[in-house]
Each structure stands twice: as structure tokens, then as C-alpha cells.
Image (cartoon, rainbow, N blue to C red):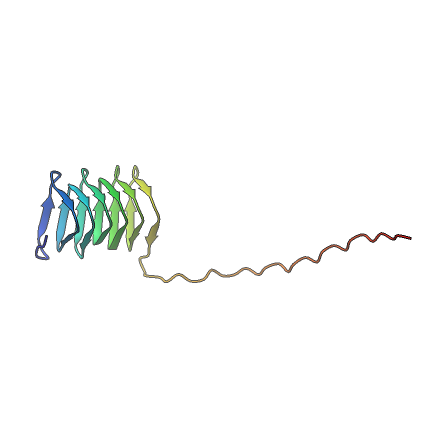
Length: 137
């Protein structure tokens, strides 16, 4: 599915898709998808949404149930009662109370590279205590 970059697209709850979904601009998706979504636009997932697959977008507003990883160049917003089973990565992240989320997050607004943690000086190894000498005559 393609649209111009200013277009707003809507796929209602009676839509079921198997495969990859690509679009430009904005999309409100309420249906079921078994596949992936890739866009440089804005994705809004409705309450009835069920997605089994990964999502990559500029920004994503999540309602419904998602099983897969979500990656956004800008922001991921997860609304109350949403269920997300997968890792999420974004520049900004907002999660409302009441969300079910099972996965890892990476929120990195300044695109900071991980640095090595400062190492603590280790204690020198303790010398073993001298064993008691027994004299046998």
C-alpha cells in the first residue's frame, strides 16, 4: 500500500493482512496483521489491532496486542490496556499505567554510544594463612 507523504490512511478492524505493509505519511491500523510494517511515517494502532511481526516507523502509538519488536526513529507511545510482547527501541518512550509489556527497552534520545563502565580496583588476592606445622619425631 502506498500513499503520498501527506496522506492519512485508515485500515479498519475488518482488515486482515498476511505479508509486509509499507506506507508513507500516516496510517491508522485497527485490523490484524501477520507480517511486518515498515514506514518513515506515523503509525497509530487501534484497540482492536493484533500484530504478529516487527514494526519499524518514524513514530508509533500503540493500542491493541503486538507480538514482535517495535523500533521508532522518534517516539513510541504505549497506551493503557495495550499488550506488547517484544523489544522496543526509540528516541523517546511513553508507557501508560495498565500496559502489559514483556521485553527489553532501549531509549536513547541523544544517540549516546555505550561506554565501558569504570572498573573498580580489585582487592589484591589474600595470601593463604600458613598451615600449622606438626612435628613428627
